[in-house]
Image (cartoon, rainbow, N blue to C red; front, side, top):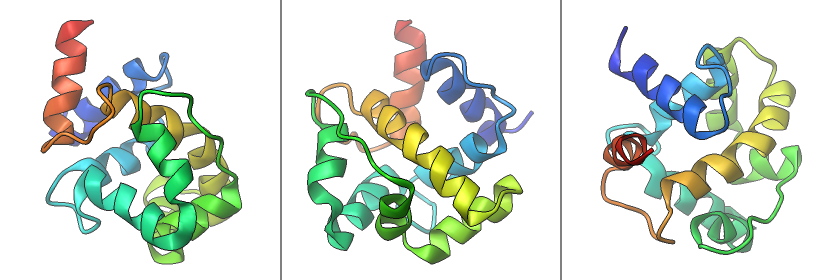
Length: 133
């Protein structure tokens, strides 16, 4: 099992036992590394901010209530290229991927930013969360 598979399992556990075999969860996990083409968690948050969804994504990072996001806003925030890449990796249509991501991303980003800020290495943050469980 590779590192990304292991991280997918960790993320699944943090999100209430979602299946580690969820290919979309594994695809999103691959975006979280600092070496990803998106720029890791900080790049993901910045993409939403620059695409007009700063208030929504900032609520996920903060320690307050998470604002909901629609599948259309997921596409707006990520951009259609990134959404297509995720959907392709997961074997889903872009519409199905954006629908699933609208439920997945708010919780995932919230769990990765428990102190209301983005850590330098989100994968290291995942390991800390697991060790603290």
